[in-house]
Amino acid sequence: MNNYKQLKAKIDKKRAKICIIGLGYVGLPLVVNFAKKNFFVYGYDTNSKRIKRLEKGKKYIADIESNQPLKLIKKNKFMPIKDERCIGKADIIIICVPTPLRKVKTPDISFVKKASKTIKKYIKKGQLIILESTSYPTTTREVVLPELKKSGLVEEKDFFLCFSPERVSPGDKKHPVTKIPKLVGGLSSRSTKLAKSLYSKIIKEVHSVSSPEVAETSKLLENTYRLVNIALILEFTIVAEKLGISIWEVIEAAKTKPFGFMPFYPGPGIGGHCIPTDPKFLSWKSKKMGFKTKMIDLASYIDHFMPDYVIKRVDKALGKKKINNSKILILGVTYKKDVKDLRESPALDIIEKLQKRKIKVDYYDPLVPYLKVSSINLKRASISIKNLKKYDCVVVVTGHKGVDYQRIRKNAKLIFDTRNVYKKDYKNVKRL
Image (cartoon, rainbow, N blue to C red; front, side):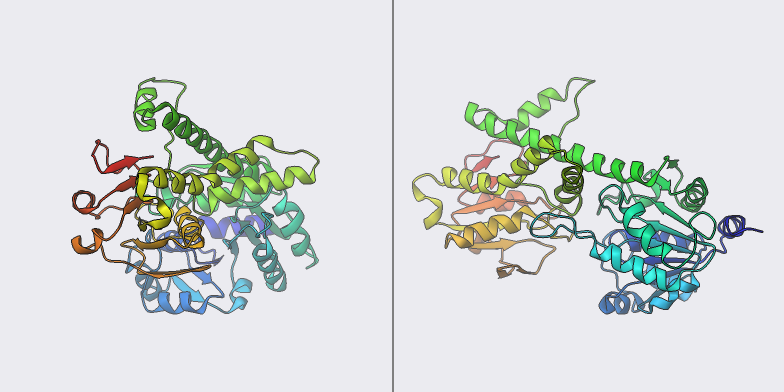
Protein backbone atom coordinates (compact mmCIF):
# COMPACT_ATOMS: atom_id res chain seq x y z
CA MET A 1 0.00 0.00 0.00
CA ASN A 2 1.45 3.45 -0.95
CA ASN A 3 1.88 6.40 1.43
CA TYR A 4 -1.32 8.10 0.28
CA LYS A 5 -3.53 5.06 0.80
CA GLN A 6 -1.96 4.27 4.17
CA LEU A 7 -2.50 7.78 5.50
CA LYS A 8 -6.01 7.98 4.07
CA ALA A 9 -6.88 4.74 5.86
CA LYS A 10 -5.43 6.05 9.14
CA ILE A 11 -7.48 9.24 8.86
CA ASP A 12 -10.68 7.38 8.05
CA LYS A 13 -10.19 5.06 11.02
CA LYS A 14 -9.06 7.96 13.26
CA ARG A 15 -5.74 6.23 13.92
CA ALA A 16 -3.71 9.09 12.47
CA LYS A 17 -1.76 10.95 15.15
CA ILE A 18 -1.90 14.73 14.82
CA CYS A 19 0.68 17.30 15.93
CA ILE A 20 -0.50 20.89 16.09
CA ILE A 21 2.31 23.44 16.26
CA GLY A 22 1.21 26.56 18.15
CA LEU A 23 -1.45 26.49 20.88
CA GLY A 24 -2.98 29.92 20.44
CA TYR A 25 -6.41 31.06 19.23
CA VAL A 26 -6.10 28.89 16.12
CA GLY A 27 -4.22 25.85 17.35
CA LEU A 28 -5.88 25.05 20.67
CA PRO A 29 -9.48 24.90 19.35
CA LEU A 30 -8.24 22.51 16.64
CA VAL A 31 -6.57 20.35 19.30
CA VAL A 32 -9.75 20.14 21.34
CA ASN A 33 -12.03 19.37 18.39
CA PHE A 34 -9.81 16.68 16.89
CA ALA A 35 -9.25 15.08 20.29
CA LYS A 36 -12.99 15.09 20.98
CA LYS A 37 -13.40 13.06 17.77
CA ASN A 38 -11.00 10.44 19.16
CA PHE A 39 -7.83 11.45 17.34
CA PHE A 40 -4.68 11.50 19.44
CA VAL A 41 -3.24 15.02 19.33
CA TYR A 42 0.15 16.39 20.35
CA GLY A 43 -0.04 20.09 21.17
CA TYR A 44 3.47 21.38 20.54
CA ASP A 45 4.39 24.86 21.74
CA THR A 46 7.68 26.48 22.77
CA ASN A 47 5.85 28.53 25.42
CA SER A 48 6.41 26.63 28.70
CA LYS A 49 3.74 28.65 30.52
CA ARG A 50 1.08 27.51 28.06
CA ILE A 51 2.07 23.87 28.45
CA LYS A 52 2.03 24.07 32.25
CA ARG A 53 -1.35 25.82 32.30
CA LEU A 54 -2.88 23.15 30.08
CA GLU A 55 -1.39 20.36 32.19
CA LYS A 56 -3.00 21.94 35.26
CA GLY A 57 -6.32 22.27 33.49
CA LYS A 58 -6.17 26.06 33.24
CA LYS A 59 -7.41 27.62 30.03
CA TYR A 60 -6.17 30.87 28.48
CA ILE A 61 -8.55 31.11 25.52
CA ALA A 62 -12.20 32.08 25.91
CA ASP A 63 -13.41 29.78 23.14
CA ILE A 64 -12.37 26.67 25.07
CA GLU A 65 -14.39 25.23 27.96
CA SER A 66 -12.41 25.45 31.20
CA ASN A 67 -12.20 21.72 31.89
CA GLN A 68 -12.04 20.46 28.30
CA PRO A 69 -8.23 20.25 27.80
CA LEU A 70 -7.71 18.45 31.12
CA LYS A 71 -10.49 15.96 30.34
CA LEU A 72 -8.84 15.14 27.03
CA ILE A 73 -5.42 14.79 28.67
CA LYS A 74 -6.86 12.33 31.20
CA LYS A 75 -8.48 10.37 28.36
CA ASN A 76 -5.07 10.14 26.71
CA LYS A 77 -6.30 12.00 23.63
CA PHE A 78 -4.26 15.18 24.11
CA MET A 79 -0.65 15.72 25.12
CA PRO A 80 0.58 19.30 25.49
CA ILE A 81 4.32 19.11 24.91
CA LYS A 82 7.42 21.27 24.45
CA ASP A 83 9.54 18.45 22.99
CA GLU A 84 9.81 18.96 19.22
CA ARG A 85 10.48 15.26 18.69
CA CYS A 86 6.73 14.67 18.84
CA ILE A 87 6.66 15.88 15.22
CA GLY A 88 8.36 12.68 14.13
CA LYS A 89 5.72 10.60 15.92
CA ALA A 90 2.79 12.26 14.16
CA ASP A 91 1.12 11.41 10.87
CA ILE A 92 -0.31 14.90 10.39
CA ILE A 93 1.34 18.20 11.30
CA ILE A 94 -0.68 21.43 11.35
CA ILE A 95 1.24 24.72 11.59
CA CYS A 96 -0.64 27.39 13.57
CA VAL A 97 2.11 29.89 14.40
CA PRO A 98 1.90 33.72 14.41
CA THR A 99 2.57 35.76 11.28
CA PRO A 100 2.82 39.36 12.53
CA LEU A 101 3.88 42.47 10.67
CA ARG A 102 7.26 44.02 11.35
CA LYS A 103 7.42 47.68 12.40
CA VAL A 104 8.14 48.58 8.77
CA LYS A 105 4.84 46.84 7.80
CA THR A 106 6.43 43.91 5.98
CA PRO A 107 5.39 40.29 6.71
CA ASP A 108 7.28 38.49 9.46
CA ILE A 109 7.14 34.81 8.53
CA SER A 110 10.05 33.85 10.77
CA PHE A 111 7.77 31.58 12.85
CA VAL A 112 6.61 29.75 9.72
CA LYS A 113 10.22 29.33 8.59
CA LYS A 114 11.26 28.06 12.01
CA ALA A 115 8.38 25.58 12.11
CA SER A 116 9.27 24.35 8.60
CA LYS A 117 12.91 23.82 9.58
CA THR A 118 11.86 21.92 12.69
CA ILE A 119 9.49 19.69 10.68
CA LYS A 120 12.29 19.01 8.17
CA LYS A 121 14.39 17.53 10.99
CA TYR A 122 11.73 14.92 11.80
CA ILE A 123 9.78 14.50 8.56
CA LYS A 124 9.12 10.94 7.46
CA LYS A 125 7.30 9.21 4.63
CA GLY A 126 3.53 9.28 4.78
CA GLN A 127 3.07 12.59 6.63
CA LEU A 128 0.60 15.34 5.78
CA ILE A 129 1.76 18.89 6.59
CA ILE A 130 -0.84 21.68 6.66
CA LEU A 131 -0.09 25.39 7.01
CA GLU A 132 -2.92 27.36 8.64
CA SER A 133 -0.99 30.53 9.50
CA THR A 134 -2.11 33.45 7.36
CA SER A 135 0.56 34.72 4.99
CA TYR A 136 1.11 36.13 1.52
CA PRO A 137 0.30 34.04 -1.59
CA THR A 138 3.04 31.52 -2.51
CA THR A 139 4.22 31.07 1.11
CA THR A 140 3.32 27.35 1.10
CA ARG A 141 5.02 26.71 -2.23
CA GLU A 142 8.02 29.06 -1.95
CA VAL A 143 8.79 29.00 1.79
CA VAL A 144 7.52 25.76 3.36
CA LEU A 145 8.01 23.35 0.44
CA PRO A 146 11.70 24.17 -0.30
CA GLU A 147 12.58 23.57 3.35
CA LEU A 148 10.80 20.20 3.43
CA LYS A 149 12.40 19.15 0.13
CA LYS A 150 15.82 19.46 1.78
CA SER A 151 14.95 16.20 3.55
CA GLY A 152 15.24 14.43 0.20
CA LEU A 153 11.58 13.41 0.28
CA VAL A 154 9.21 14.20 -2.58
CA GLU A 155 5.82 15.94 -2.21
CA GLU A 156 2.82 13.81 -3.29
CA LYS A 157 4.95 10.65 -3.32
CA ASP A 158 6.60 10.67 0.12
CA PHE A 159 4.78 13.48 1.97
CA PHE A 160 1.82 15.78 1.36
CA LEU A 161 1.59 19.56 1.75
CA CYS A 162 -1.49 21.79 1.92
CA PHE A 163 -2.62 25.27 2.90
CA SER A 164 -5.88 25.67 4.82
CA PRO A 165 -6.55 29.20 6.11
CA GLU A 166 -7.73 29.64 9.67
CA ARG A 167 -11.09 31.35 10.01
CA VAL A 168 -11.26 31.72 13.78
CA SER A 169 -13.50 34.41 15.22
CA PRO A 170 -12.44 34.76 18.89
CA GLY A 171 -15.33 34.92 21.33
CA ASP A 172 -17.93 34.24 18.62
CA LYS A 173 -20.20 31.54 20.04
CA LYS A 174 -22.38 31.49 16.93
CA HIS A 175 -19.45 30.54 14.73
CA PRO A 176 -17.17 28.02 16.44
CA VAL A 177 -14.42 26.32 14.41
CA THR A 178 -16.62 23.32 13.64
CA LYS A 179 -19.35 25.43 12.03
CA ILE A 180 -17.16 27.59 9.80
CA PRO A 181 -16.65 26.11 6.30
CA LYS A 182 -13.02 25.13 5.67
CA LEU A 183 -10.89 25.76 2.59
CA VAL A 184 -8.12 23.36 1.56
CA GLY A 185 -5.64 23.78 -1.27
CA GLY A 186 -2.82 21.27 -1.68
CA LEU A 187 0.37 21.23 -3.73
CA SER A 188 -1.09 18.10 -5.32
CA SER A 189 -4.56 16.61 -5.66
CA ARG A 190 -3.64 13.88 -3.18
CA SER A 191 -2.63 16.47 -0.59
CA THR A 192 -5.94 18.27 -1.06
CA LYS A 193 -7.93 15.05 -0.72
CA LEU A 194 -6.11 14.05 2.47
CA ALA A 195 -6.63 17.47 4.04
CA LYS A 196 -10.30 17.44 3.09
CA SER A 197 -10.71 13.97 4.56
CA LEU A 198 -9.07 15.09 7.80
CA TYR A 199 -11.02 18.31 8.35
CA SER A 200 -14.27 16.60 7.38
CA LYS A 201 -14.00 14.66 10.63
CA ILE A 202 -14.63 17.85 12.64
CA ILE A 203 -16.14 20.31 10.12
CA LYS A 204 -19.29 19.66 8.12
CA GLU A 205 -18.40 21.72 5.04
CA VAL A 206 -14.89 21.48 3.55
CA HIS A 207 -14.29 23.15 0.19
CA SER A 208 -11.37 22.16 -2.05
CA VAL A 209 -9.57 24.68 -4.26
CA SER A 210 -7.07 24.10 -7.04
CA SER A 211 -3.88 25.29 -5.31
CA PRO A 212 -2.38 26.69 -2.09
CA GLU A 213 -2.20 30.10 -3.79
CA VAL A 214 -5.98 30.17 -4.27
CA ALA A 215 -6.52 29.28 -0.60
CA GLU A 216 -3.92 31.82 0.58
CA THR A 217 -5.39 34.61 -1.54
CA SER A 218 -8.98 33.73 -0.53
CA LYS A 219 -8.08 34.31 3.10
CA LEU A 220 -6.59 37.71 2.25
CA LEU A 221 -9.64 38.64 0.18
CA GLU A 222 -11.95 37.85 3.12
CA ASN A 223 -10.16 40.27 5.43
CA THR A 224 -9.38 42.88 2.79
CA TYR A 225 -13.11 43.00 2.03
CA ARG A 226 -13.73 43.86 5.66
CA LEU A 227 -10.85 46.35 5.81
CA VAL A 228 -12.07 48.29 2.77
CA ASN A 229 -15.72 48.34 3.88
CA ILE A 230 -14.83 49.42 7.40
CA ALA A 231 -12.67 52.20 5.94
CA LEU A 232 -15.59 53.28 3.75
CA ILE A 233 -17.98 53.51 6.70
CA LEU A 234 -15.35 55.41 8.71
CA GLU A 235 -15.07 57.96 5.93
CA PHE A 236 -18.86 58.23 5.89
CA THR A 237 -18.70 58.79 9.67
CA ILE A 238 -16.47 61.82 9.23
CA VAL A 239 -18.74 63.19 6.48
CA ALA A 240 -21.87 62.59 8.60
CA GLU A 241 -20.37 64.52 11.51
CA LYS A 242 -19.66 67.47 9.24
CA LEU A 243 -23.24 67.29 7.95
CA GLY A 244 -24.52 67.23 11.52
CA ILE A 245 -26.31 63.89 11.16
CA SER A 246 -25.97 60.52 12.89
CA ILE A 247 -23.99 57.85 11.01
CA TRP A 248 -25.81 55.24 13.10
CA GLU A 249 -29.19 56.44 11.79
CA VAL A 250 -27.79 56.53 8.25
CA ILE A 251 -26.72 52.87 8.52
CA GLU A 252 -30.08 51.78 9.93
CA ALA A 253 -31.80 53.52 7.03
CA ALA A 254 -29.53 51.90 4.42
CA LYS A 255 -30.15 48.47 6.01
CA THR A 256 -33.80 48.62 4.97
CA LYS A 257 -32.72 47.82 1.38
CA PRO A 258 -33.06 44.02 1.01
CA PHE A 259 -30.29 43.64 -1.57
CA GLY A 260 -27.00 45.21 -2.60
CA PHE A 261 -26.06 46.47 0.88
CA MET A 262 -24.33 44.90 3.86
CA PRO A 263 -23.96 46.96 7.05
CA PHE A 264 -20.54 47.72 8.50
CA TYR A 265 -20.22 49.84 11.60
CA PRO A 266 -17.78 52.58 12.62
CA GLY A 267 -15.53 52.50 15.64
CA PRO A 268 -12.30 53.95 17.05
CA GLY A 269 -10.14 51.96 14.60
CA ILE A 270 -9.42 48.35 13.73
CA GLY A 271 -7.83 45.70 15.90
CA GLY A 272 -6.97 42.04 16.18
CA HIS A 273 -4.50 40.09 14.09
CA CYS A 274 -6.47 39.67 10.88
CA ILE A 275 -7.95 42.92 9.54
CA PRO A 276 -5.06 45.30 10.31
CA THR A 277 -2.44 42.78 9.17
CA ASP A 278 -3.63 40.37 6.48
CA PRO A 279 -4.34 42.86 3.65
CA LYS A 280 -0.80 44.16 3.99
CA PHE A 281 0.52 40.70 3.13
CA LEU A 282 -1.19 41.05 -0.24
CA SER A 283 -0.06 44.65 -0.63
CA TRP A 284 3.54 43.64 0.06
CA LYS A 285 3.42 40.68 -2.33
CA SER A 286 1.86 42.84 -5.04
CA LYS A 287 4.67 45.38 -4.77
CA LYS A 288 7.15 42.54 -5.20
CA MET A 289 5.39 41.73 -8.48
CA GLY A 290 5.45 45.36 -9.63
CA PHE A 291 1.88 46.38 -8.78
CA LYS A 292 0.84 48.90 -6.12
CA THR A 293 -2.49 48.15 -4.43
CA LYS A 294 -4.01 51.62 -4.04
CA MET A 295 -7.34 50.66 -2.46
CA ILE A 296 -5.80 48.45 0.25
CA ASP A 297 -3.23 51.09 1.16
CA LEU A 298 -5.83 53.86 1.32
CA ALA A 299 -8.17 51.75 3.45
CA SER A 300 -5.31 51.00 5.86
CA TYR A 301 -4.53 54.70 6.11
CA ILE A 302 -8.14 55.63 6.91
CA ASP A 303 -8.50 52.88 9.50
CA HIS A 304 -5.29 53.86 11.27
CA PHE A 305 -6.28 57.53 11.24
CA MET A 306 -9.28 56.88 13.51
CA PRO A 307 -7.55 57.07 16.93
CA ASP A 308 -6.46 60.62 16.03
CA TYR A 309 -9.98 61.40 14.86
CA VAL A 310 -11.47 60.07 18.11
CA ILE A 311 -9.15 62.32 20.13
CA LYS A 312 -10.13 65.29 17.96
CA ARG A 313 -13.83 64.56 18.52
CA VAL A 314 -13.31 64.22 22.29
CA ASP A 315 -11.54 67.58 22.29
CA LYS A 316 -14.49 69.11 20.43
CA ALA A 317 -17.00 67.50 22.82
CA LEU A 318 -15.18 68.96 25.83
CA GLY A 319 -15.70 72.46 24.48
CA LYS A 320 -14.06 75.21 26.53
CA LYS A 321 -12.53 72.67 28.91
CA LYS A 322 -10.23 71.37 26.16
CA ILE A 323 -8.62 67.94 26.21
CA ASN A 324 -5.12 69.09 27.30
CA ASN A 325 -6.55 70.23 30.65
CA SER A 326 -8.78 67.20 31.12
CA LYS A 327 -8.76 63.87 32.88
CA ILE A 328 -9.86 61.05 30.55
CA LEU A 329 -11.12 57.52 31.27
CA ILE A 330 -10.89 54.98 28.44
CA LEU A 331 -13.69 52.45 28.83
CA GLY A 332 -12.73 49.13 27.23
CA VAL A 333 -9.24 48.41 25.89
CA THR A 334 -9.48 45.01 24.16
CA TYR A 335 -9.84 45.09 20.37
CA LYS A 336 -13.15 43.20 20.47
CA LYS A 337 -16.08 43.04 22.87
CA ASP A 338 -15.99 40.26 25.47
CA VAL A 339 -12.62 38.94 24.23
CA LYS A 340 -9.46 39.27 26.31
CA ASP A 341 -7.19 40.19 23.41
CA LEU A 342 -5.18 43.40 23.05
CA ARG A 343 -3.63 42.73 19.64
CA GLU A 344 -3.62 45.90 17.53
CA SER A 345 -6.30 47.41 19.77
CA PRO A 346 -7.06 51.05 18.84
CA ALA A 347 -7.46 51.76 22.56
CA LEU A 348 -3.71 51.35 22.96
CA ASP A 349 -3.06 53.93 20.24
CA ILE A 350 -5.50 56.36 21.84
CA ILE A 351 -3.90 55.97 25.28
CA GLU A 352 -0.37 56.38 23.92
CA LYS A 353 -1.31 59.47 21.93
CA LEU A 354 -2.98 61.03 24.98
CA GLN A 355 0.02 60.24 27.18
CA LYS A 356 2.43 61.79 24.67
CA ARG A 357 0.41 64.99 25.00
CA LYS A 358 0.82 64.77 28.80
CA ILE A 359 -2.93 64.28 29.23
CA LYS A 360 -4.01 62.39 32.34
CA VAL A 361 -5.57 59.14 31.15
CA ASP A 362 -6.81 56.02 32.97
CA TYR A 363 -8.66 52.95 31.73
CA TYR A 364 -11.25 50.44 32.84
CA ASP A 365 -11.83 47.05 31.27
CA PRO A 366 -13.43 44.12 33.12
CA LEU A 367 -11.17 41.67 31.26
CA VAL A 368 -7.83 43.47 31.70
CA PRO A 369 -6.57 44.10 35.27
CA TYR A 370 -3.42 45.89 34.11
CA LEU A 371 -1.93 47.29 30.93
CA LYS A 372 1.78 46.88 30.31
CA VAL A 373 2.15 47.27 26.56
CA SER A 374 4.80 49.32 24.76
CA SER A 375 5.10 52.61 26.69
CA ILE A 376 1.83 52.05 28.61
CA ASN A 377 2.02 50.89 32.22
CA LEU A 378 -1.34 51.31 33.94
CA LYS A 379 -3.47 49.56 36.52
CA ARG A 380 -7.20 49.28 35.96
CA ALA A 381 -9.08 52.24 37.44
CA SER A 382 -12.24 51.99 39.51
CA ILE A 383 -15.62 52.90 38.04
CA SER A 384 -17.18 53.64 41.39
CA ILE A 385 -19.59 56.57 41.41
CA LYS A 386 -17.05 58.67 43.33
CA ASN A 387 -14.25 57.92 40.88
CA LEU A 388 -16.36 58.44 37.75
CA LYS A 389 -17.07 61.99 38.81
CA LYS A 390 -13.34 62.78 38.70
CA TYR A 391 -13.14 62.41 34.92
CA ASP A 392 -13.93 65.15 32.46
CA CYS A 393 -14.75 62.60 29.79
CA VAL A 394 -15.32 58.85 29.60
CA VAL A 395 -14.50 57.46 26.15
CA VAL A 396 -16.22 54.19 25.25
CA VAL A 397 -13.70 52.39 23.04
CA THR A 398 -14.88 48.79 23.50
CA GLY A 399 -18.35 47.84 24.67
CA HIS A 400 -18.31 44.76 26.91
CA LYS A 401 -21.32 42.89 28.25
CA GLY A 402 -21.70 43.11 32.00
CA VAL A 403 -20.72 46.78 32.22
CA ASP A 404 -23.49 48.97 33.63
CA TYR A 405 -23.38 51.73 31.04
CA GLN A 406 -26.50 53.44 32.38
CA ARG A 407 -24.94 53.77 35.83
CA ILE A 408 -21.85 55.22 34.20
CA ARG A 409 -23.95 57.66 32.16
CA LYS A 410 -25.81 58.87 35.23
CA ASN A 411 -22.57 59.66 37.03
CA ALA A 412 -20.19 60.80 34.29
CA LYS A 413 -19.83 64.44 33.31
CA LEU A 414 -19.38 63.62 29.62
CA ILE A 415 -19.24 60.44 27.55
CA PHE A 416 -17.90 60.05 24.03
CA ASP A 417 -19.29 56.79 22.64
CA THR A 418 -17.42 55.22 19.70
CA ARG A 419 -19.42 51.96 19.76
CA ASN A 420 -23.04 53.12 19.96
CA VAL A 421 -23.64 51.48 23.34
CA TYR A 422 -25.96 54.44 24.01
CA LYS A 423 -28.54 54.12 21.28
CA LYS A 424 -30.62 57.05 22.53
CA ASP A 425 -29.70 60.72 22.73
CA TYR A 426 -28.59 61.93 26.16
CA LYS A 427 -27.38 65.38 27.16
CA ASN A 428 -24.03 64.14 28.43
CA VAL A 429 -23.40 61.58 25.64
CA LYS A 430 -21.80 62.35 22.28
CA ARG A 431 -21.64 59.56 19.70
CA LEU A 432 -19.08 58.95 16.97
